[in-house]
Image (cartoon, rainbow, N blue to C red; front, side, top):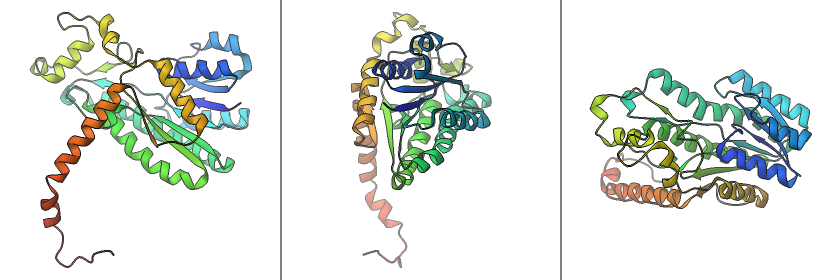
Length: 290
């Protein structure tokens, strides 16, 4: 039996992970923003499920909840940083407050949670950090620039953290799902104040699709074009943790594989085309390393 700590545990991918872990007998510390949403599971599994209210935009609350979880549970083996949401629309359409909240949740919240857990994992001499990122951490498209940029930031920070944590026996996995059939977009999305100048652009068309305003589509149909199965993804995340070893990055969904691959190939091709230019700007007296 292992003990897992999972943020944003009330819906989507995380709820599937929680259910599978409880079914097999693991202990789960689950945090949610709204109290009561896990009460049915609590009644079914009793002390196997530990609950706490947590908003990742409240730094002190993060520290207090993590400290309480370790104090009451004794040990935590796996920490799953899942809580996040999407902000959509053209970058100009989002307010300062919306942008700040997006980064406070997706980036700063994830980092603060990991930083709160790290001292405990070091004392244990082991632990597994699972950071839920996104295929959007490898590319950016009109209408998703702010969400994508938050995931790019997560990718950069946790790639470094993985290397920093490894000497202490702490593993890190960056999970990069594609689209998932959850309420992530249809219910949890935040959309900037729409501007007429963007209505017929790619950014505007994306928002219109999400809002069910495109001819032939309504919001209830959105999940039909999303291919990721949250239960299958939950199984693979648990399997990776159980096995212990594996690549730092874990792409889930054929769309994630295809989108990430295309983005990397495009960037590599653009870089190769600039090789001569890059080398031409070296200092003349640079000391070459052998």
